[in-house]
Image 1 (cartoon, rainbow, N blue to C red):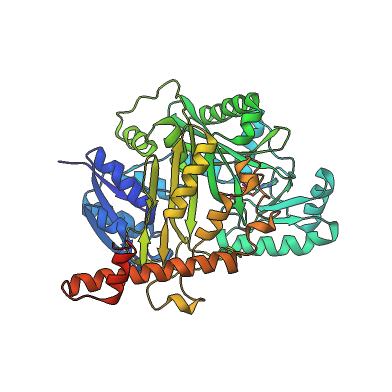
Image 2 (cartoon, rainbow, N blue to C red):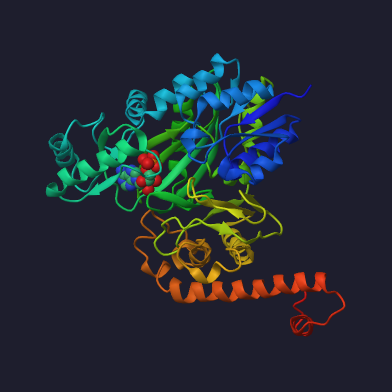
Length: 507
Ligand code: ADP
């Protein structure tokens, strides 16, 4: 009998995990909420179980219900994906207690590295540099101010339980500390149930570079190179690439960072796929930021340049059939762009129904998506629609390939909702198309403040971008209608059919 994997997640990552499970001959079990009845992840798996209402607490975060499905379905493994329960030590523990194999690190590792304060202490003991600041949480605004003065303004107040840039505040002046402390603390408390904050020096115009590691859980670990994830909005990644354009200038820094990452992974006997995040300044000096004890959203760029299926490695390790190679060769260049349901100028979520979706194709193009046809980007979940990643031998070729692929991508709200504007789906595609053509991006000059310091990236999107989108939208609407009409009335000559036939626009 086939062994079964329960995928405790949704959207593109659940689809991606299911594909590798199938390649390995494993049965796939999906869970889905009421908002995800018709989602691809529920359709692609061998079995799918409805586990509750849309609210994550009632479904994708509900450990009791997930374990109940695992028991009923006869699952042997649980893959948590990223987000949701992937970094909750109590989930890893509950799986093991129920005799299920958690595809990820041990609960105590998640606890140790997931708490940013404990992680910082671990790093200090290894002699790896971290960003200067308070080692632990600061009890009040007064103490935050003392640390800020010690390391020098500007500083960042950061949530000890943080993630996704939440509970993070930049503070430039002494007098702003109390208000920032109060608001960051509140945000952290409501997002993570823990309002603890620590102080870090703000590194000016830095780069976010992270190292993919993989450990066998017995003290051996290797790295699979770096990913540069500096292009961000709201402290969240939108574009990732490997190798890092910054580290191309500092090859020795790359070697030292990779060594530091492997040292960290070995010191905690790390099991499975993990990522060590660093912040690097423009002189090539690097500081530890945090460790993510799971698969990253941006793992495809590493898969492109290494040829490794990271999920297959995770699953084989869980099955006890994996042996860690001593080294991995990297080849060429990969970039990933994240396509979100969000306003292309403000970057605020703009979820809604998808009426039409058409993915790009061609050599060395990968499309990881939550939707293959019409669907709903639910307001209950992260509004990412798809990840478009490509490979090419060099960075200029990678940029060119991504440009063509982005130009080919079409995601539109359903007919009828298009004119409504607010309240209907918007995507960041026009923004990404501008980004891929931007002179600083093409030159590889991409510090984390690139978007904030390049108003030309978001200006004129309303006129130029939306206009183009509207033209494309109406053209597609016309073509879709034409197609339906041709099917329904094959022998009748419609005006549109004739026009399109003449213009060579028949689909
Ligand atoms: P989270 O866990 O909330 O994602 P991180 O610590 O990973 O928070 O930081 C997210 C992003 O915020 C980084 O990629 C970087 O762009 C920015 N950042 C974090 N710490 C600093 C710092 N000390 N100086 C400058 N930028 C920082």
